[in-house]
Structures are given as structure tokens and as C-alpha cells.
Amino acid sequence: MRSFKLPRTAALAALVAAVPFAGAYAASAGFYTPRTAGLIDQAQSVDQGVTAARQTDKIKPDEARDLHRQAVRISRVAQREAAAGHGSISAAQYQQLVAQLDDVSQSLRNATGSNFLIGNGADAGYYPNG
Image (cartoon, rainbow, N blue to C red; front, side, top):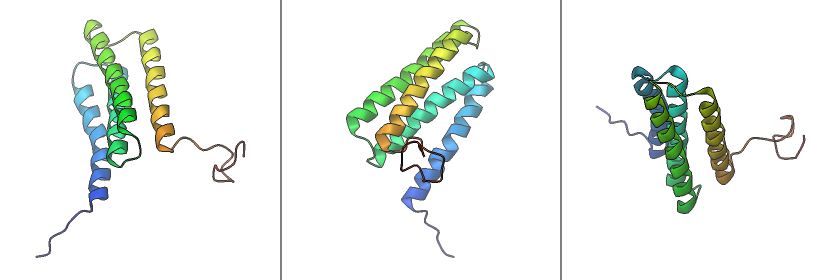
């Protein structure tokens, strides 16, 4: 019988792809509202992206620490607010946390060079304002 070995990159990609879904189930299966669970899961996914970027040497260790710290803080604030609010957080707090998480995510994309493309797509994003 032949043994099948998964390349290291494929195994990492499979893990990164599967973990957010497992986390989504774990958070939503608890007492969080779907919106709160989604926010916590998004923060965890950004943190996993930071970890993956660091492991592939796409970002420096100090950048990874800073982005990790920010993502974890957002997740903890959401969890603390949800605990105080019987599983939900206020709309204002939710919007603030989502904006902060978007900033962290954008910082990660900028640091790894995978930020959004500029232009209409015809130029493959290489030229500003397409």
C-alpha cells in the first residue's frame, strides 16, 4: 500500500481554511448571538492570518506581535461585552470593534503585500486608478 504525504504548504493551507469554520461552530454553538459570534470568529481568523504570514516569513516578528495583540484584544473585548450583555453587544460597540478589526486586517494585507487591487481589473491592479 502506498503512503500519501501531504506537502507542508498544502497541509498549512488546509488547516488555515478549516480552522475558521470550526471556530464559527464553536462560538455560535455557545451563548453568543450570531453577530457577536461572527465578530469573534473574524478576529480569530485575522489572528490566524497573522500567524500564517509570520510562519511563511511574509511579515516581521514585531509586526506579527503587534497585529496579534490587536486581534486578540478585539476578540477579548467582544467576549467581555457579550458576557455582560447576555451574549450580545450593543450596535455602537459592534461597529467600533468591526472598524478596529478592519484596520488590523488592512494592516495585515498591507504588510504582506496582498492589499486590494487598484483599478478596474483590466490592468491586473498594477496601475493606480485603472
